[in-house]
Length: 620
Image 1 (cartoon, helix red, strand yellow):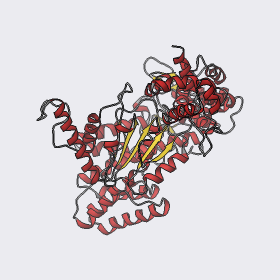
Image 2 (spheres, rainbow, N blue to C red):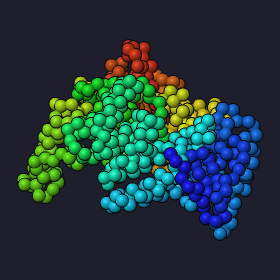
Image 3 (cartoon, rainbow, N blue to C red):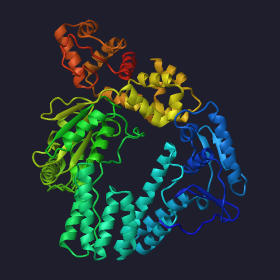
């Protein structure tokens, strides 16, 4: 990158740059930013402009391993120095840096910070491209890129917190560069992007979109041999470093260059496993489940037709695991990865006709009859709906036979909901998530999600409340995740709640969760309620299973129960107790040992929060 001309904010205002080394300029003159710790605080605040930055985040950026007892007082000194440097904000003379319950918030305008200006120009460029104004898009994107002076915050990357923010900023810059290069290629000006793309590919050799743009720019410039060599180098690198082949889209671009003239093409992205009906609960980054994720990737990535069932109680993280696997398997499914929710928002099952219609829309499948419920159905009424549904089902089977895609059927209520959707031939794979075991489906590969281990649950909690706060009282943090029963949803909700209630000591919140009469009341964050999700699972149970679960929940408080104790609590014989307990295991409401053990020797458990809910219902 060549350094662009010096930019200045409005007269008398300081202009900050993060897209390169951290700098501040006033009327064109660079300002001293003080010692390293002070610069780390300033960089962290500037990387999250106009957003509260928790004290723990600032502490971790400055003292990642062992903050001193005076850390908060030192931070106040560094923030005070930042206030002096920034001066008043706006005509009202308000403080630039204010402290509230969410942390420190730095007020700064677009014309005073390069990352804000960069984002504004990038959005304008993409909007111009969307309107078909490619020349305007190229100009605006290039203007944004002129702000990029090198690796962001490259003088402070020895701090893990700052390095993470710097990596995020660099990824944004790379994406805009790819947008710009592809726009220039479409405009017939590929040569202007060649050299910059080559430099960036050398720094980011596994970034496929960059390499595809470099190939295309070389090819469109008449340098076909070099373009083909770029692909061959990439193929060898992928095999050596990752044991993978280039994506089908990249391979298609290569084949088009072998057999065609200078036709600019972009690799077509595979459909993402995303749905607008996704639940709002999964707010944290994916955490834990390394064994289960590895199992999923091995089974689904082997290239054979597969059906996998991931089971576990409501809130166990089944959808998060399925989506994580789907994203990582993009290269194995060239015809896309699609996800369909099998229930409505109220938890009731969607009809087969609804599911088939959505699959048809996502995959471009059309039946030979009108859509179900359409008044134009030739046979009319219920018979017409049945005919339309049958036609969609046939069309769906035909599509699966001719494609290799991953279909995620999320939150399946029972076996009957999916039997007609599974591929009878072809190379499509189906990943099913369900609360129950769906024992009637065969042959399938099964993965049951247990509770998170303590370490995994603490990692998830730390991502939401900050590692510093977690380290301040590790004993209380451990009590919190154990009171959540290792249920990912409950740990997430605890973290979201504590992230807002920053004044609340972890020990006090742990006391609240330890209280059986109050725990479920505490596990609510905004519109996300653990009780609501557990209630949905409760409704799935048969009336008899609910009564049995209510009786067994009390036995589980001591760490589990045996078959003899279950028979005593249920007032029945051994054979009836076995059937009752195993029915709840099938429904995902009772857990059993992972290894083989006789029914009498096994120790069965009811997840803590489900047991608390069962007690509530027993008293209704």
